[in-house]
Length: 448
Ligand SMILES: C[S@@+](CC[C@H](N)C(=O)[O-])C[C@H]1O[C@@H](n2cnc3c(N)ncnc32)[C@H](O)[C@@H]1O
Image (cartoon, rainbow, N blue to C red; front, side, top):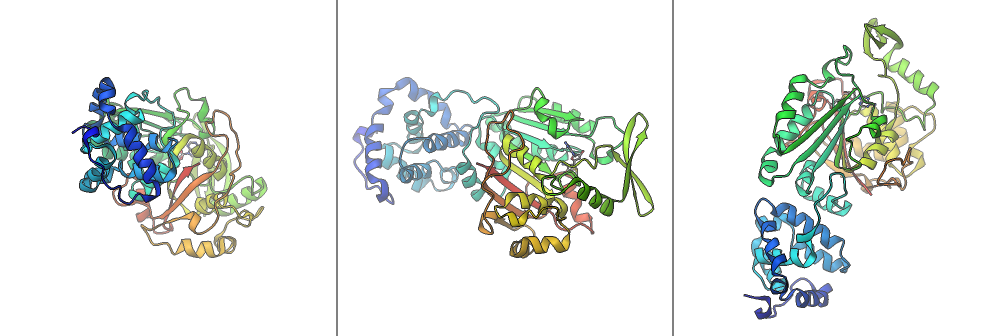
């Protein structure tokens, strides 16, 4: 049946924008006949492999359109992936109301009308999703890595990747939809440990895993690992993308991110390191240099840079500039409260030169501390429900950045090391066996 023949139906649940719906319905009438070539081009957009991506692109076209917000919301309801899968009856009624066509043809008509069929191929590293789309998606799915399915060129950068077990778990989890959708996942991982160094132990990228990752899913995975690179020098890497769909950092290094240099003097940091870790000094180590740490009569050797402090602001700057969605997992208590202090608006959370120790943390964070500490394992909370988010996070450098200003629109806190059904890192999987460690935290952040 052509749209011209379709009789007018009531526009349920849409009184706020009924005039706009009617005007849209008039404009879309006959679109198929007016643009036969375009109509043919939409056929492949609704194949079962392409449909999830098409719905996501339709949603972003709607969000960037000039239609009123209520009408955009109404249109967005017609493109919800879950509705397409589970509530086809309601969906087909809505779509028929709007276009006069049954569901699949209606979606094709929307693609044609909104220009989704002629969108140019997406370049890796270009922004594909809006923060509000991400917010909706995270509300619907507890697995943040789901977002990778919703973009044309999914990409992820993992900072301080360690032994690459997270990369392996992620690729195994993504394999079915990568094969089905014929998309290619760009997976970049980096770590400061120098490949071949005798220091760093279990955190070295495992050779077998590196080889396997490179040959796994040859057309569906572009994997790259940089070893011996400080995250502070990331922009010197030739193939680094300006922006990734996701940036992750699992078990952010301690003490690297456990002290914020804009809040604590170098003397205070040094004192804290000696108090908590022991006496330390640089020593020769074969052809390398090592940091020798003496603690309770025992001597440990680490990479020479182990106690170089970058601080949470450096990490937040990096992830917010490079990621559309950022996931920090298995964050230990030392790093968590220092990170949190930088995300909150009130200066009371950033007392100058006060070390965050168990007693001071309770005092500085007050009711926020009590609320977070009682968060059960597996539970989550939006930080904005507990305190005001920081309006402007200090920018350490705007070089090579697609985002000059720094602000997080949404920050979700989760409690737990490993969350059911979600790819995890080596360290995250060790937490349950470490009796002295407190339950770690997750931060899932959407930069503005
Ligand atoms: C606690 S380990 C976590 C490793 C892995 N993400 C995991 O969860 O198992 C921290 C990692 O961060 C790396 N790292 C520390 N400082 C770094 C820096 N400035 N740049 C890049 N990587 C760094 C360390 O070499 C180490 O592999």
